[in-house]
Image (tube, rainbow, N blue to C red; front, side, top):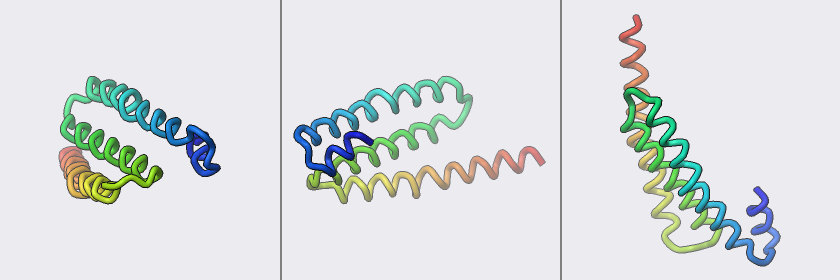
Length: 103
């Protein structure tokens, strides 16, 4: 949030701070959460992998969007397609399958 405010105020080195924040999120936070969930999950590992891929693409495309770099639209389209075409159908199929087994 601080780096976004820095970017909005056009402060010096705001772009570097924003990129450093995105780097930490993409290469430290998401993999740590993914590894923990991957170890705890007995099934649904493909769903976790697709979710991580979608989340990483969204964070990178937002960093591209804020910095006005090219290829932002392509990354955002791929991220949204990954989430809506792959993750949501798998999640709903899995939840309906589990719900049918419990009845």
